[in-house]
Length: 166
Image (tube, rainbow, N blue to C red; front, side, top):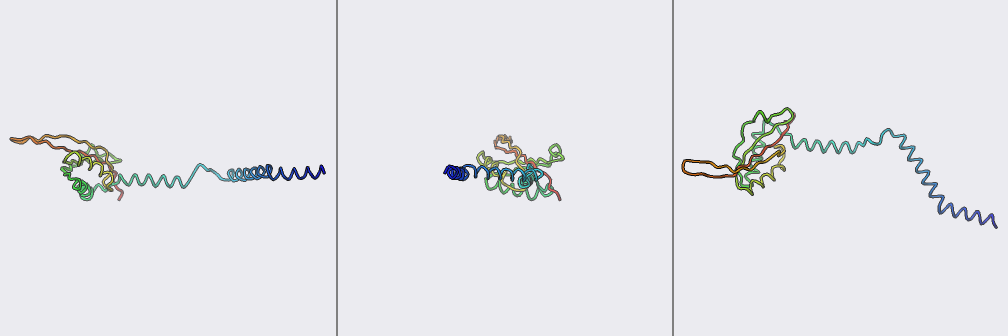
């Protein structure tokens, strides 16, 4: 009876405690062999592809066809300004000090009331193909005529862009 009771206790202990421990130990050995067989798990192709796609998306925001900037981008910008009741007052010639090998900065001047100018600043980053809004300055400008002085608000916007590859 002692031998039968010992065998029954061993079977119960095996089912309740030892079986799961032995299975976990086998799984651990299998995973360690798989890990040692793979060359380098730190390189994750999916992560690198997502990172590359995100960087390409960011670069696409900066890319502008600078030859057609005066036509296409200015028409997009003026339609944004017109929607906010702002006037695109000036698109000055390209200043050589703002042209660097990696990118170009274009300055634009808008005129209008303060809330409309602020809305225009908010709308510009959403337009595609005009570059990225680098900075914006709102100034109060007084213009003197012969018998009258008029004040207006002028928004100077600096857009940064990378020349699109042809």
